[in-house]
Length: 280
Image (cartoon, rainbow, N blue to C red; front, top):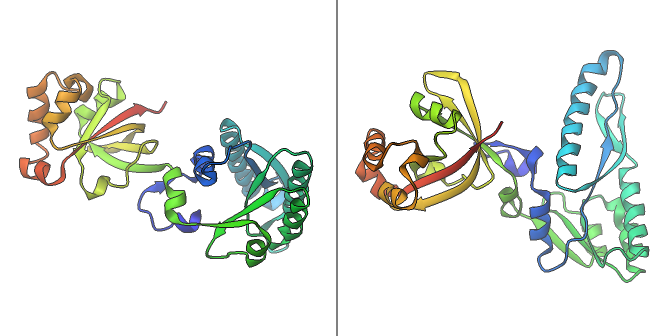
């Protein structure tokens, strides 16, 4: 995922990856029984590596909490530090292989979607076939395991468009003092912008960091609940109340808008209503 997101201009929140939505999209017509996530367990260390290990441990605990919140089963293996100070997983692939075979023997699934390019898993895939179960190998074209491709019943090579929709992004926008305070105080629930090229990457579930123009240290984080794309600001007002935009009435709203956007810009790009919720 890091390779896929390295060129994006927004802050990509890999920690908030939507595993359930991604999995449902991946398996198409099959029924999702369970998602299992295998990873090496970070251990706290003393000595010169204490600070690094504490940071790794804290980050992994955040990840595990996020996974458990999405009801993803987390199975921990070992994480070994090599002499060069790098960390490598140990025994995670063995744990994965053993449990794939055990769950097949217990008739817990019909098709396993294996998201790994570790060729050491080929024997496990071959053993699973002896229980009349199928395996779909899920990987990337870069680093594809041809051993798993050959051993599996089907192969899915993920593209950016298969993954990016399930990764929330953090967008940054600036606000004048009045709308900033209205959003902060819960008096404005829809932010308006032109639906121009800059807004095309915005999607429901993303987060926006609003900064106060006069003091960038003041920020508000919000979650995008809905995106309303219309031809004009007048159409937005026909759909929602002026108070949703922090305005007293229609005329007040249009006066504010015209101070920022011209009629020509509006006609060229259309408008975007961003329904938001402040993140505590």
